[in-house]
Length: 82
Image (cartoon, rainbow, N blue to C red; front, side, top):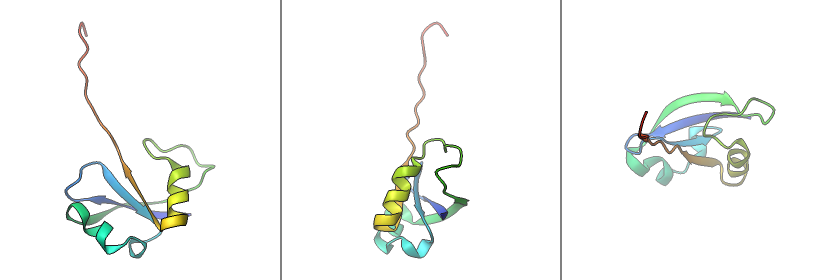
């Protein structure tokens, strides 16, 4: 399945994936300041895993709702003695 991924302008590390921008409802597009194109790829379960992206959930959401929203949580930790 060919998909396009977009990122929100005002919500860091949050992405919306769909077959095309037209599949993403306007209210979802406008949340957090709108969307910008990030990349296009072939979403295939037999391809290697993608970091911080659940392909099974994305495919299920796209088939049911037309789009999938994912967020990447990042954090920095400082460990004592290192």
